[in-house]
Image (cartoon, rainbow, N blue to C red; front, side):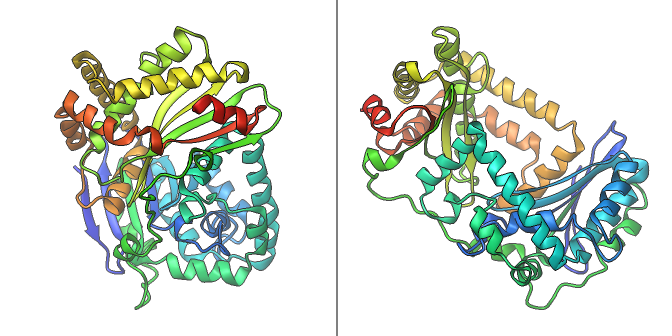
Length: 429
């Protein structure tokens, strides 16, 4: 059973014992990401994530961090999202003290040296170019820009080459000092938890929080909120096409969705699973199995504190794009007009609950689950509670959210491929 504790310096500790594992995951998460940045500092959260691996007062160089963790056979990494950043080490339970020591050291004692900052700019710019060159990834960013516009949610998490190159060490250091405080840190420990946990936690108690430091509550209110326009823009402004040489047309077709605290989120998850959640989903059967229009077609969602997005993504033959769009739009209209069958809903519930059971065998997934629950939900929900609420969803609930989300006039489209925008617009009208 998970437990919550407040450490003396403001750190929120979550412990999640996982039976039958020999591993422990130590995850430190902060409720700050790219949506908290200004245009000038676009990419700062991601940049800072990189810099925390570049050396501390105790481990002066990046190799000192990586060599020690890799010698212990640990998995370690970090991730930056639009509204959170996390750092984790998953390690054999017998070596978990190293995980506590290393993550606390990186968070509290990173040097962020000027020479390393300048050097890392080159690595980050190449990372941005790598994503840009991959149309499957690039279409995600293009879609964000067309649905969220020129807002923090619409900007690339990594920033732009120009914004990254312009960030100074002083700005990065200021961002680090402002946003990385024990008062807004969630420390989630999952897996096999050692009896010496209290001793290991001393690593995270080593730094007191400054008097004016932000708390997690601050981040729940202080961000640029996304407000959808009352009247949807003209179709031309809701479609973004990047014409480039590619064998496929990489498509995302999406709609404004619901925020991550919406009581209808369980119905949305089931709706999207029925629509495009696997090889037995409606889109997979209609687009791939019956017509051979795509290899990959799926439905999914992204959710934030204030808004969400529901989308369909596919890789298509440009010569058959018109047919594919008609089929996809047809399935969206159908699922918003007629209730799904009782069998479809039953299978979707079984699919999601089964997939959750498998994923939660991983202590890292457990650690992240509870950290996100604390940071973004008004009330902590265990996986069991989520499944229980999902089981209560009816076909009427699914139809209601489908009608709410799949509104043709609100549809946004992002496409990368060897096809021009005018042709895409003609296929959509």
